[in-house]
Length: 538
Image 1: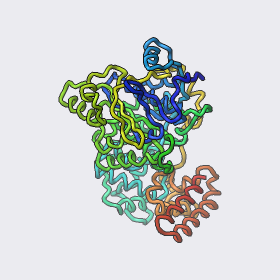
Image 2: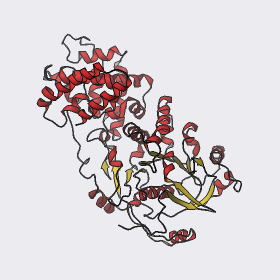
Image 3: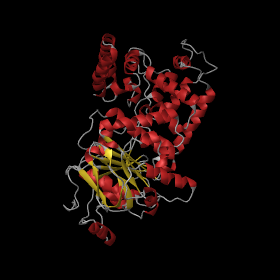
Image 4: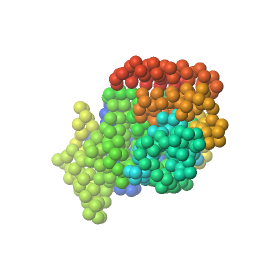
């Protein structure tokens, strides 16, 4: 591996970003206080992102970044000592030395990286509604479907599972809506109607939106094996943080899918990682490119969730850096959480552009030596106004700096280089082959066909596993929805189904009844979640 020259290396507690009258340093201990990189197209945002990613990786911090144009992939290969890079480094008193960084490529479509999958259950009704652009009524029906799935032990893994469940909750005029047995799905239909009026027209609209999502590649995203976020938290054998690159050029053809997918990842990190306060350096740094797509037309419920995640994920040791053209793209409540700022040039050709320049200038701590609003329009390529948190977490005065040159390659790598990196990836083979587990679609098909097992060992609403699903759903609340499988499916994944249904299922069901019945309050529920969660995962 090519290593950095000692003169180019960052110090142990901060990252060198650039130099003006004074050096600009990003303090690692404040790296989880989030940040913002803005500027017009072609002003150097991607290079700034790469410089920051390289610095975090050198410090042993794993990085995740979406690569919209393919340019960021060059971080996996050593840079070239081109004249302009050598000169820029020399002007800063540095010695340019090429470097490269251990990189893992990910791709929702599985074409230019390892496939990234999530289950429908993991995505949840709120984010899925956002992805499908559903209105309030349609979102309500989707919530009903998820609740019915939880109560009946139906695992929602892929798109066909969700389609089958939506068909199952639709009122059927030709069947009785009771438990008489004339309709094998009558209990499910009755349960759905118990939560409100689920109409065929509303379900039909959701089904059509699912078809649009499928045509855009959604079928490849939903499925198994689902992504384990711990695979983003790796370091290489030299102790450097792995750089995870999401290939997003094709994903960007559906901006809503792109934005919802990244928000899902943030939400999963928020749910899964433990509280650690303010660590000496972040556990992970997450770069969200084209961040304005996250906030465009977002309903209030979703905006509240985004604000909550951004505000609280800092205590999990995760730094989130939004990359967008104008700072006015980011809502004020979230903008106030972004302490580390890099502002490249903006052009003021229209009233909106002038507003963006004024807004950008006002977000910085003033520097008496600079007319911030004027300088923003005068910045050259590779220059930026920067203000990083310092000391006790207060922003430094804004400075005009030249961004240091990246040590890795600037620009895209070749297909051959990408293939070689993927072939030597630490997660090679883990996600590359899709798995179609028994889930809601198969269970409902069996019921309709009359081949479902009897209550003493059935998967679904009856029997041991069905009762266990209901018990754990009651104890866990929404936490069951965040699991990759329903309760019954979690148990039966890695062991023989017949043994599990009769032995493990009964043991865990009895444990759930006894523990859940005897322990009350939030502390009790937390203990039950820990005990059962660990057992179910095993």
